[in-house]
Structure formats: structure tokens, C-alpha cells
Image 1 (cartoon, one colour):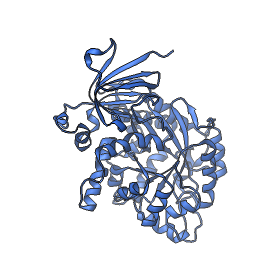
Image 2 (cartoon, rainbow, N blue to C red):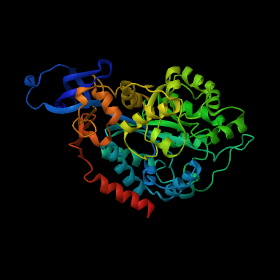
Image 3 (cartoon, rainbow, N blue to C red):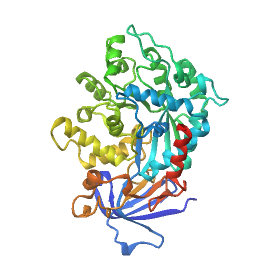
Image 4 (cartoon, rainbow, N blue to C red):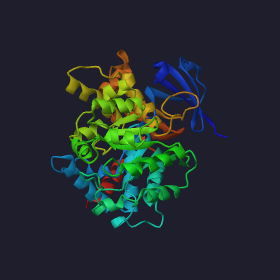
Length: 458
């Protein structure tokens, strides 16, 4: 039987209950069993762990390409497409050993930033020139192992990737170079490889890992192949994620090929629905926004990467108003800091609108916690409440950035100025993974990151 654990949070954000003081939190195994605000410190049982500062549910990084971390700060021309060539060069060098080392270090960096669950949008499936490994899911399994080694839960969003773009007539372009490593040749090949994971009917592969699907983009999966991906999703009640309208060129080429926007193509193919998440959703028409809202899709925005790649600023307030749940991701990992992602989401909207206050601090907190977990297929996480996964992130309120927060609204101050450096303690699924700002499973996160990046770039 699991031994119960108790924490006493000086301040805790309880979502529906807002901020509460002196919160006694109990868990057994990986789940919370009781949450009791207003318990004086003098009434605590021996062994109760004190959490000074502000405690939140675990954060969910809903969109990650772990190997992109090797490109942090890298020059690559003045467009997204020039950067993509650099990314392809890195992808061409990744063997399983290098990939595991880099992913483990990246996931440990996420843990230090308060992330307890990651959605890994995974498309590096095969060896050079598309040669399959003896285990066709070699890279997918190593990503799950890397997450476990860093203490995170993971949804592996395994991407179907079949084409190198589309011609004006709608025909799929042949894959070239490293793209062959991404492809299973056909949607039937993708489905067969997914079956080899051996997940159960709920998509679970291990206690910490579930399997989801991804349609890489309308550029990479012809519309006629998309329904089979969705059929797999429906059979496993699994999430489906799609890169959508990240760049204007994607829209232009899609309109030339199909006479429709990418969102309209996905709608006609039956991709849009409550288990579907659109990533980026930057360049949308008003009809696109309406379609996404009516379908109740989630939208994962990655503001730091979108800024780094000069993608643009998407219509997040309009999407939220239309009925889309929002989530946050660090995508290419130009920075791994969901507090910064949430802040940039609000600030970028202020820059394009000339108006403040598009999202409240509570909105941003939900996007970073419950919103991300839900779109990754973990609806029973992201809140501090009985029955939910026992994930806790405690931030210090005495750093130069957050000093004086208790004199105002600590949650608002956190999202106005807090960073990953303010995270002190992290509990994931009931287990300590960060204490006093140090990762308990990975001894030297900066050293491992440096070594892993060097192994890929040298």
C-alpha cells in the first residue's frame, strides 16, 4: 500500500477556488486524496512537508520537439524556411543514443521549469534514408524512456508524415533527404507501426506514457489519408495534434492546391473535434476561427517559438471567445519557461491590439495547467483536487522578480514577472523530482544539456 504524503502550502492556487492560504494537501501514490485550505501550521501532523511560496498544479508543455533544443540561438537565415533547413541538418545526425541523451536532458530542463507532463510531437521515426529499425518504434520508445528518466509523464504524439508538400494541382510532392526518416510510406504503414506500440484501448503504453496521434500538417498528409489517422484516434480515445497555419506560405500553397484554407481542409477531412488540438493556428480567417470554435478544438500556442521564427501573432482571444480551449507549448525550445510563454501570449496581443488585459492571470494559469493536460489526454491532471494526479509546483516569492508579491495578487505578479528560475520544488505523480531548485534524478542538467547538444552539433 502506498504511504500517504502531506504537504502544507503557504499559498496555493486551486483553480475553481482561486488562491487559498495554509492549504493542507494529502496524496496516496500518484493521486491527491484531500485538499483542505485554512489549516494552521500549528495543527500539522509530524512529517508534513512545508511549501513556502505559491504552489500551483503541475504545468503541461503541450507541444515539444525535444531535438530542436540543439538549435537554441542558432542563426539560420531570415525566414522560417531557412531555419527549417538547419533543423533538417540536426535531424539527419540523430541516432538513438544521441536522441535519448538530448531528450532526457531537455525533459529534465522542463522539470526544473515546473513541467510535469509533456506532449512530444514526434516525427523522427526511422534511420537514414527511411530504413526501419528492428523495432520500428525505436525512437518513440526512447522518448518515453527519457521522460521517465526525468520524472515526467508524456503523451507521445506520433506523427503521420507522408509528403514533402503539395503541388498546385493538389498532388503530393515526393519526400526528399531527411524527410524520408519521418515517413512510413503510407497511412497504412503508419497505422501498422502504431499497432506495434502495443498500447491499450485508452492509448496507455506505460503508467507514465500514453500514445496520441499527430497529422504533421496539411503539407505532409494528403486530405484523403487523414480519415485513417482519425479512425485510429477514435479507436483509442486518443488526442490528435496538427500543425496549423503556422506560416502564410502554408496557406497560400494550400489554397492553390485545394481551393481551401488548411482549417477548411481539416474540417472537410473530419479532423476537427473535441479531442483535436491545432498547434500555432497563427494565420486564420474569420471562417477558420468559427470552424475551430464550433468543433471545440483545443489550440496550443507557442509564443516564444512563434516570435523566434517570426511566425506572427495568432488570434488567441478570438479563438478563446469562439469556444477553443487554449494550451501552451515550448515547441522549438528557444526557451523552456511556460511562465514566460504565458506572459508573451498576453503581451503579444497587447502589441498588435494596442489594448491591455486580453487574459487574466487565472486564464494564463489554466492554459499552463489544466488546458495543456486535457489536450494531451490527461484530463485528471492540472488541478489540485482529490482524485487528480499529485503534481505540485512551488515557486519562491522572495526572488528579486517576485519580492512583494504577497502584498498584491501573487498569481498576477507571477505571470507578470516570474520565470522558470523561481521554481523551487516539483512533485510529479506523487514523487519528488525537483527540490530546492535541483533535479533529483538528473545530477547535472546543464552539463548533460551541453554534452548532448555538442554531440549533435560537433
